[in-house]
Length: 65
Ligand SMILES: [Zn+2]
Image (cartoon, rainbow, N blue to C red):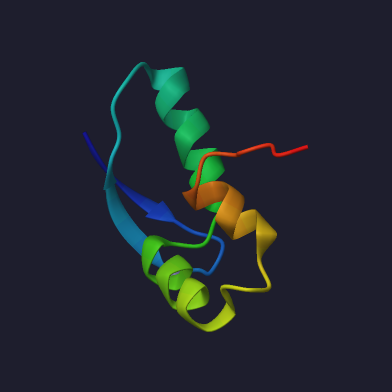
């Protein structure tokens, strides 16, 4: 099912969402709080060192302590 989802950066992207109605609305709510894929890519290129959260998002957490 394709949805027009508005992201935190105010960009609207068409996203394919699957699952039950609650699952889909949960994902939409999540997307509303996230930057869109393009902005995340831009952000990653320019700010890779400053965003621990972004790294946590792209890589599985690896605890070394
Ligand atoms: Zn964006």
